[in-house]
Every structure is written in structure tokens, then in C-alpha cells.
Amino acid sequence: MTTATGHPGPEPNPGPGTTTLDAARVTDAARVTDAARVTDAARVTDAARVTDAVKVYGSGDTAVRALDGVSVGFPAGRFTAIMGPSGSGKSTLMHCAAGLDTLTSGTARIGSAELGALDDRRLTLLRRDRVGFVFQAFNLVPTLTVAENITLPMDLARKGGDRASAEWTDALIDVVGLRDRLHHRPAELSGGQQQRVAVARAFAGRPDVVFADEPTGNLDSRSGEDVLRLLGRAVRQMDRTVVMVTHDPVAAAHADEVVFLADGRLVDTMTDPTADKVLDRLKAFDTTSAAAPGGKGAPS
Image (cartoon, rainbow, N blue to C red; front, side):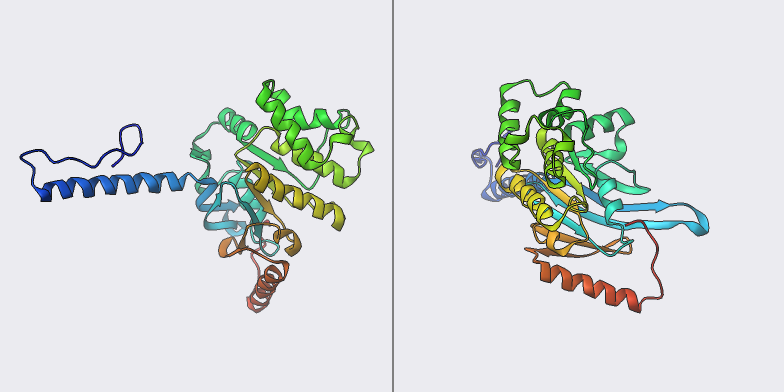
């Protein structure tokens, strides 16, 4: 059984008046309690999760159901890609899971925190402290150096002055390969280098999860490959969590798992993806869409 502190303890010892059957019942009850605790612990291994997620834009005859009852978790310490045809709801899913948009119904959580239960201030603080973002546009401050852009979120939050934070940032700079560019400004960097700065900035505060929305969309193939490898290294070498929206099978192949949406619904998952396997799955969507009487026109 488990003690009050959560540590394993000895099995119940029946007293003089306790039968063997009673002792067995006590032991079984303890096992059930322990199993429930293990199940509860397993639930919080998702860095982010949405349950029965519905998102409707507009109303009446013009209403668009961008998400239609989606339930999916994004495991901690893993790299997950979200894919689907245009209008499938993949970006909407990411925005709602990250707290950038609100659900019409259902729940979204970062760890154990339910986003819909937070007021604007607490939601802003949660996004600042526990979530990182990488977008297609680099969104760097042009007047700041690379080093200043990387630490900007921590500086605004008045965090990062301790030794552990300094060591983390230093290790992160090596992972992204920017040590020789720390005193340069964004205009002096290539597009791939600017996106690497954006990735470093997203991870600098050690967030629970980093959401990346088409992070290679503005990059050439070589620079895009560098950024994808960087995201993978952050997950595997620094024990981070990444959720990435992409339309590119080659990009998705860098993930540990791919979840597929179509018409606002979760329709498939794939572990250990390859570019060819992902492409074949997307072709199946195209075939299905061609046979359907028309799309929904939902946001992607």
C-alpha cells in the first residue's frame, strides 16, 4: 500500500481479531487506491490536453464548426505534429490548446490547469511562465541583439537572474548554435538564424510546452531542416515538449507522433512517422475529400 506521504508502505497487518478474508479485503482496497493514484498520475503526464473540444466561428446559417468534439493529449517530453488538409482545424486546435483562443465548449488544459477557469490575468501569466511559442514569422525585436531577444521574455517577467537559469540559457545557446551571433541584430542574420533565435527564445523560460505554428513556412529547405532538428534536440536532449502544426510531411517526420484532423475531427494518429507514410495518409484524405459533396470551409 501507499503511505500518507505517497511512499510505499507495508501491507496491512491483520490484528488478533481480523480474519484472513478481512485482511485480503483491506489489501485489495489498498491496491485499488494505489491503482487510482497511478491513473491520476498518468493523466498529468500530458503537457497539454483538450477534451471534447468544440470551436464554432460565427452563428446561424454562417456558423463554421472548426473543431467538432476533439479529445487529444500531447505527452510531456515528446514531439507531436498536427496535420490535416486545409480547413481541417489544425491551427485552431493549437491556438485553443495554447490558450491563444477560447473553446466554445469542452476543456483545454496545460498540465493540470484548466484554461477556461482562468481569468485574463492568470491566463496571461500562465502563457508567459509555462508556454512557449514559435510562429512562421520570426517576431524578433529589431533593435535588440540575439542575446537580448533570447532572454526578453524572462527579462519582462523579471526572472532568470539565478545561476540555474544562466546555465540553462547558456546550454540552450549551444543547442541552437548561436554562440558566435549573440551580439548581432536580427537584420544581420539569415532567415534560418532568425528562426533559431525565435526557437531559443521560446525555450529560454523552460516552459512546460512549446507550440510551433508552421515554423519552417518562411524558410528554404536547408534552413527548415536545421530548425526541425533543433526542435527535436530540444525534446530529446533537454526533455522539452513540442507541439507543431505543419502541412509538410518532411517536417512531420521529425516528430515522435502525428495526429491527423479532418473536418474538425481527430481521425488518425501515427507513431514513428516517415515522410512517405505521412504523405500516403494525406493522399487518402484528398481521395476522401474528392468523394465528399463539399468541404466545411473551416479555419485550418
